Length: 291
Image (cartoon, rainbow, N blue to C red; front, side, top):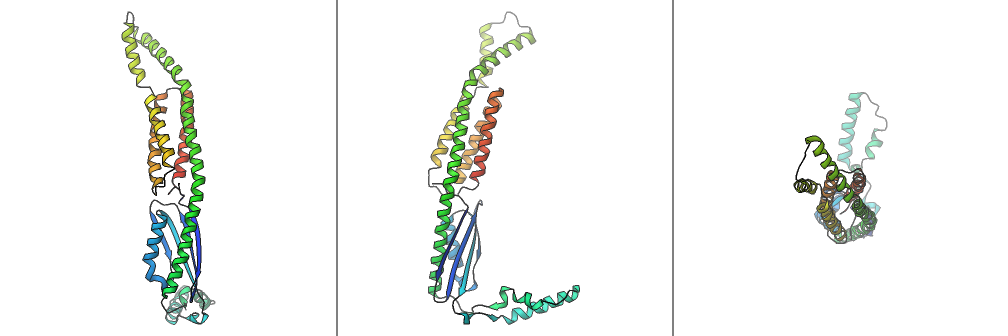
């Protein structure tokens, strides 16, 4: 089943020291790009978190927020004096140099997250285990969200594939009349331009057939039909790189449609081809968000 690269999930857990929350927001991207915001006391498992997110989500831009709220208030709320002093000195010197007022200077410094020591200790094994639990909850929700969005994308894409297939069928009634018109026009132009008289009719017909075969679109229609069938089969697979493969296949579909259009030499067929191209462009836009 196709999955969208767009997703959102959140998880929560509680240890003896923290109330833990994990939120993950995903958007489409060519590769796996993880932006992780993690409290200092959990840095020792940063690599493990990134590996888990990459393994579970496979591809896309993932913003991961980890929020750890201390349960014991005595462990937090103390000023980080070296940081506060350094900030106060630098900002005061700057405001004096540019002639700004120092009103509200301390209040603005205290809004800085680094101005307080929330916890000097490292996380315990239980803290780490609960964080992993919250992370797994969030990842599961993201995957569930992606599958649900993938179903909607799949429905839309298959409708457009059917529209392209229908366009291929609509071309058929115009093919033979087009050939007859072109044969007649070529024959008339040859006689009018070159003043041909006494020309071997069989030889002229052979040349006309040779020329008209170059404009025949049967092979393109056969290949297009094969690509459309393969596309329908591929969207039912559980491949993690289905988006890339379908993108390559969409290019092949576009190549056959373009060739049909260039060979058409017929206004009615060209109108149908334009509609097929429009449907294909919308499919390509949707595929950008497929995992």
